[in-house]
Amino acid sequence: LTHGHEDHIGGLPYLLRERPDIPLIGSRLTLALIEAKLVEHRLRPHSLQVKEGDEQTIGPFSCRFYAVNHSIPDGLAVAITTGAGTVLHTGDFKMDQLPLDGRLTDLPSVAALGAQGIDLLLIDSTNAEVPGFVTHERDIKPVLEQVFAAARKRIIVASFASHVHRIQQVLDVAAQAGRRAAFVGRSMVRNMGVARELGYLTAPDDLIMDAKALNGVPDDRTVLVCTGSQGEPMAALSRMANRDHQIRIEPGDTVVLASSMIPGNETAINRVINGLTRWGANVVHKENARVHVSGHASAG
Image (cartoon, rainbow, N blue to C red; front, side, top):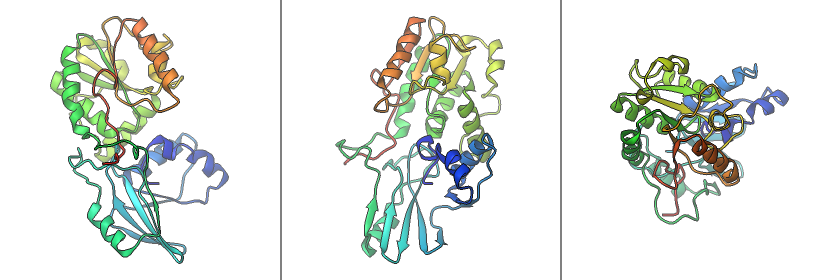
């Protein structure tokens, strides 16, 4: 498991019900996110924790793991040496030379592996047809600062529940602006709790509150970080847009969609934007502000 994004780990509960003997191999954060998710399904997996530089012999395969930079900490690539040849699976990665956590994609080690010879390369091709270079994740912070400075009431930021780097920047800007923050949505609360416990997400002790406790804090001093950036019908933001959530969108609220539109989700996302706008929210998204950068390398 190269990293902990939902599209890479979401099917595990269903797979493990059929094959509970399959071991899960991944980094510290990846396995922690998976194990927290599996608790809800009453599953206890067999796990092997690895890190960059580790070598493991697994059955007839020799595996070596390499650090890769992505939009979630602790991503790994894996080189698998077999009797038939060597396979390199990169996982999802980007070439951010100024990552928030200082953890770079390990190009020297991958280059050395390439010099030895790779027979099959399985590579992240998400942005392979996009020319140029991907923007640094940290470049979003000045845009968030502008959005926070302009907001006069409550701020609601919707993001993927596993996008630790993005949420770290939201919390950093919230602290600078003197706002208290709360997580909304089961997966957001769960994943950020894991990230904080392991030290991948940091914040002052008095910054993050339970969402219910924010009721006593003035709207211009609050930030809600929630799920639903892709218009998922049962996620927190969609329910807010439909007036089906205990948190009510009010005129003057600022809602930030801090993600891209995944192909196929455009209709659902625009439906949410329309709903939020109907209730008087100012909606900020990738098309009108740089509140998202990709976690996938471009063509160069």
